[in-house]
Amino acid sequence: MSNSAALDSFLEKWRTRLPEWQLVQNFVPAPQREIAVAWFALLQELADAMNIAGDPLPADAKLAWWGEELRDWSRRRSRHPLGRVLEPVQAPWATLADALPALPLMRALPDSAEAALPLILPLARAIAQVEASLFPGARQPEAVEALAAQLLFSRWMEVPPHADTARWRDALLARWPARSGGPRPRRILNAVLRKRVERLHADGQGSTPTKPLALVWTGWRAAAGGN
Image (tube, rainbow, N blue to C red):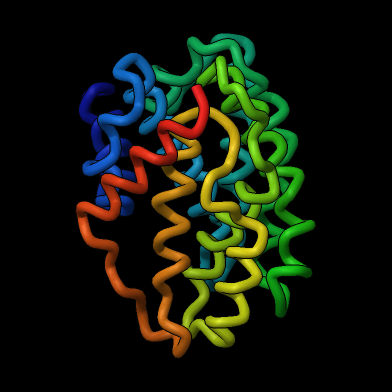
């Protein structure tokens, strides 16, 4: 597989997981769109090392590899296809690498969102620091707790059956403002994913899809909330 095809495969994998992005991506400034998708695809690759069942050793090895890869990005040496897009940006990649040990802590999910959020906050802070470099100019600092709630939601959705759905949903929404700070791509993604949380069925049996026009409105409002 060529480098270009490998990169496209990682970007498309993330788009497949978040089909709503197709409706809101035009609210991201054109120069930032490729970086945004590559960045969110990277975060998904890291999360996949957390969201596993069974033997954790392969995922731990993958996570260790990513730690070294991110540190190499700080030295302008990348091997992963996503590095073609992200590594040229001067960002605190080593800080992100240092925060990756938070991911394995989330495999044994605590009983409540209140107990789980402190475990993921160090990673959320590192992600916010990288995003400040990738997407400069945000007028408001990133709502790190909202970002932590998003990461926790991603993990929780990987652990079926979803017991106490209403309790988890309400706890996450309480820490996840409808309009958060940070750069525009993050604000848009946060708003889209928050819609998923809002529409979770209390019995844990799936969620009600957001209508396309409502998603477009959500994306526009999120984009208009800062720079």
